[in-house]
Every structure is written in C-alpha cells, then in structure tokens.
Amino acid sequence: MTRPTNPPGTGARDEGAERARSLEGRRTPLDLSPDDFAEIGHRLVDDVAALLAGMRTRPLATGETPPRIRALLDADQRFPLEGVDASTLVRETTQLLVDHSLYNSHPRFFGYITAPAAPIGILGDFLAAAINPNLGAWTLSPMASEMEAQAVRWMADFVGFPEGGDGILVSGGNVANMLGLWAARAAKGGWAVRTEGMRGADARMLRVYASRGTHTWIQKAADLSGLGSSAIRWIETDDRERMRVAALRTAIEADLAAGDRPFMVVGTGGSVSTGAVDPLPQVRALCDDFDLWMHVDGAYGAFAAAAANAPDDLRGLALADSVALDPHKWLYAPLEAGCTLVRDPNALMAAFSYRPEYYHFDQDEAVNFFERGIQNSRGFRALKVWLQLRQVGRAAYARMVEEDIDLARYFHAIAESRDELEAFGTQLSITTYRYVPKDLVARAGEADVRAYLNELNRSVQTRMERGGEAFVSNAVLGEVYALRMCVVNFRTTTEDVVALADISERLGREADAELRPGALR
Ligand SMILES: *Cc1c(COP(=O)(O)O)cnc(C)c1O
Image 1: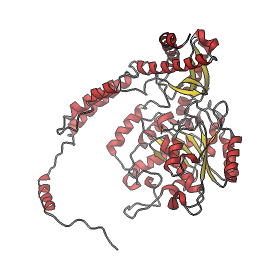
Image 2 (image 1 turned 180 degrees about the vertical axis):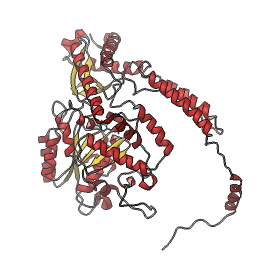
Image 3 (image 1 turned 90 degrees about the vertical axis):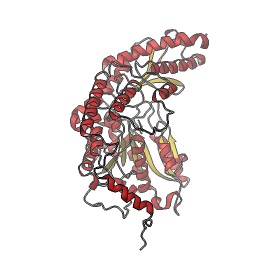
Image 4 (image 1 turned 30 degrees about the vertical axis):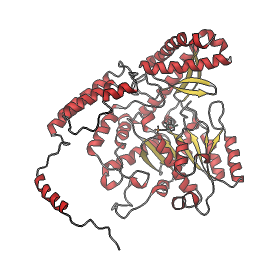
C-alpha cells in the first residue's frame, strides 16, 4: 500500500516550531473578549428589535442607484492592511445595511415569492452560528442532525407526504428540485448513469416532461446533469396555466416510438408566475402507466397543501416520488432553506452516496447528511425551520397560509371593483392585474393601445420599485404585461392590500400623464 508522505523537514519548519513556543496564551485579533461580545451583541439585538418594530412605517426600499450604493460602501477600496475596532464596525455596518436595503420583510412587499424572516428564525440563525455544528455527519452534529431529520419529518407530515421516506434541507427551491431530478435519473435512467455518465453502453436520450409554466430550475438541472436542456419536453398548458395531461401522454408516446427514454415528469404545485397547480393525481396515473418518476415542484405552493382553501389537486403531491419545498418561502424562514422529500427511503442514498475511507462515521445507526445530497460540510439551516415549526404548531401555520390566500383573493375583488384596475386571475396567493386609464378601457383591444398599456404598466412597476411604498413583480399573460402581487407574508393585512390598489392607481395616473402625450393619440 502506498501512503501519501509529508514533505521532508526544512529549515522553515524548525523556525515555525520555534515561533510556536511564543504562542502560549495566544491572543488573536479575530477573537472578542466575552465582555465585548456581550456588549456588541446586546446592542445589535436592540438594533434589530428596533428595525422589526419600525418595519411597517419605514420605506420598503430607497431606490438608490448602483453607483450610489457602491460609493456608500467605498466598493473600490482594496483589502485594508489594518483592521478596525469590532464595536464601531458592527455599529456602522448595521447602519449601512439598515438604511440601504430592500425589505422583503415589509408588509407591503408583494414581489416574486419572497417571504419576510420570522423573528424566531433570525434568532435561530444566530444560535446556529454560535454552536456551528457540521451537519455533514451525525458524529459532528448529534442534536443538530436529529433536529434536521425531525424538521424534515414535520414538514412532510404538514404537507401530507407519506411517512417512511427520506429528506434533506438544501439552499432553496432550485437545489431542492435538482436533487429530485438527480434522484430520478439514478432510479429511472435505465443504465448505471452514476458511473457510466450519459454515454453508457445502453445510453439513450433521456426525456423529462414539464409544463411551460415550470420554473427555470429545470433548464439548469437538465444542463448541469448532462442531459442538456433539449431533453426537456415542454407540455402545453390550459387557460389557467395548468399542464394538459393529454398532451403529456402524446409527448411520452412519441418519444418512446422514437427510441428515447422518458424517465421523469415534473408537476408544478404552484407556478411561479400565476400560482397554477397541475392536475397532480392525473400526472401520477400517467407516471404509473409508463413507469416514470413523478416529481412535484412545490417550492412555492407545497405548504398550501395544508390549507383548506387551496385547490384539491395540490394534495396530489402526496403521490409523488419526490417533492421540492421551500421553507424560506411559505414557512417564512430567513434565507436560505429549501427541502427535498423522497418517498423511497433509499432514493437519496442511491443518487448521492459515496463512502470515502477517510471518514470514520457510523453508517448504519445514524443519518449522515453528506450521503444524501451534494454538500459535504453543511450548516445548521435546520434550526430556524425547526424553531418556527415548534413555535407556531401545525394549526396556526395552516391558518397563516390560508390568510395569505384570502388576502390575494381580496385584492382580486378590490381590483375588480376599481374603475382603473383590471383584475386577471387569482390562484393560490398570487393575483395578476394591471392599470388601465378609464378612457382606454373600451379601446384596450386596439393594437397601439395594447402596446401602450404594456409600457404603462412596466412604468408603474418601475415607479413602485423606486418609490419604496410597496413592491410588486410582473407576469406576462399572452401579450399582456400584467402586474403580479403575491402574499407570502405573515405581516400583510387587509389595509396593505387596499393600499396596494390605491398606490397602483396613483402611480398609474402619474405614469399615464407623462407617457401618453408621446405614445398615443
Ligand atoms: C421560487 C421557486 C423556485 C426556486 O426556488 P429558490 O428558493 O428561489 O431557489 C422553483 N420553483 C418554483 C415554483 C418557485 O416558486
């Protein structure tokens, strides 16, 4: 057996040993005295408490430009030779961030699918960093690893996923979905993909099926796993952006006839654009017919499976082989926390496990998360999730999600009742709408008016982003540029959605007054 050898002794080594003798009672500039730590930490907690207390009344964003932000940071400064006093540094840095950030924790943040940070989750991240367990291996994180495993089981139970499977926390929805694809490829690829790669002796073109409304994680996953993004078959959707299952069957049959190998169908449980939920029970039936892996992207909507006012189809995620969830969305955990669940308890190990000889870990009795995913060293992101679940409990969590859905529906009703707002649809907690000046309502179908309304609503969105009163994102519905509000926010109230309607109308009138003269006769 050959062993790697250490380099032979040198003069430098002896000098180093000599210097080390002077490190008795070593003190380094990185360490803080217990008193300093306590003083700086207490002040920081007070500052964060004040930030949370003032969240409702502060501007959501400052609208500052990139050059301005870079100037404030002194971004071109090189790594300074000398350090600075920690107390001053933390105070100044807190100020810099507090005054120049965009707050998705603000009750009027309706953009994308981005949630506020739960206060106990903020404390959880602090405590997690203090303990600093490495959740790659159980031995290095005994209590922490068990807390992650329990948080995963609690979430599975909450969304109705069957007991007895496996799961792991990851950085977010993208990676959670990718793990699903890799687990599917290992299980249903049809040859030893993990050792042979995509060019094994029996290799065929692998095919994955997903609706046109699927999030872009799937391109990244197909690309990064060597399938290539052209392996994705985009399935048509209905007028509410839900996958057409008949078209799915046709596509699978065509690929089989051409000699390709279908291996996976991705159902979406809450699309990022409009909140659409695919007919998941029908997707399962088709996967059974063709022996395919069923994955559900529940990054947005999975937790709504526990909500009484969510579509029944969503509860079909319980039928999937794997599900991606995003605690940093509808569980309101501070970024980052995603989660993959698999039905077969061996599916993650079968896709990811290697057992190097330099690890001395109990392989049978305990969970070693490095074997279940792509990370090696892993942080304690589970703590904030565990604390939040434990603090609130199942019933109140379901209620918060239901209330968010109610608020999005209420906004839809408000938009319908206003002369200058046009409501499109509402699914889960997303409502799409736009501003239409009163005198253009009757002409909205004319080509030049259509183009103008798109420009106008783009401008409303930009003005809102800069103004800092509220924040929405957009959805493209056919040829219509729509504004899109999404409520995944335990701070949002009825007043906030009424205010959003008011703000949208006011900014719409302003934008119209400025843009119309040059744009439309
Ligand atoms: C947000 C989202 C993702 C991506 O999740 P990240 O946490 O942003 O990585 C994927 N799919 C859907 C449906 C989403 O809403």
